[in-house]
Length: 343
Image (cartoon, rainbow, N blue to C red):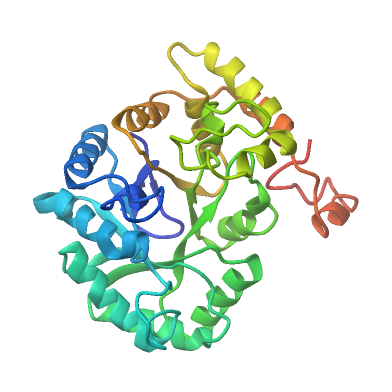
């Protein structure tokens, strides 16, 4: 299993990480479907395959995901990287959500208790909070680092300007800087190329990718006008039809074609390999509702795409450039090479 540093830090992660959003007691509709027994099997398999990053959040199954992950890791916890997140509503009080000092410190203590650990390797802000001064949030995180409760800090689902503002503020007030950003990115969701990924490369913030298979769509399991498949998380939604209309079927056709050229490969593995080859990506989070899905995803780390295959996938999934990126391409293109070329 390949390992990469997360951004401009010494935290070394496996190129595939495990997302534990599926851990729970079945009470979170369509999400927390893996109980402790199944979680132990999946954690064992991940560790055997060389995966050292396990990511969760306090709101996943209302804390049960953290509890199950902690129990499944057991005595192996010191040998892996545990990441979790805070922001979402965990109670009915005014300080039971958001990024205030009051909530972050309480949320961290609660996550430590549920995970059964003395420290969290990567503590991430699950969303931007427009109501709380960024200085207050960063100072609270810095205090948690100094107290030894967390080792590194990151963010998730930020806009480009919000990420840059947080980094600049941390530099100005002398607090811990984000080393990672957890973002949505796939062949069907390439918006992060406009601001987030270039900012991360420039500023030393590594990308942890969620939904690299577009909620499972890029596995190729869906058919028909809306592609409903009740046994999957995305099936009961109407998102499949939206993916079809956004050029998903052409992408799937190419994924199948490329997979056929690699012995035993699947469309899912091709899609995962495209993501992990992108600039700025440190680790790609895989999740699994079944052991078979986990095995298939892990196998993506055993082979790589050829440059010409990556280019073909780039072309078939290329969205139209937005402003100001579209405008800047007309100026000094030979003096301003693009991090993500527009074909």
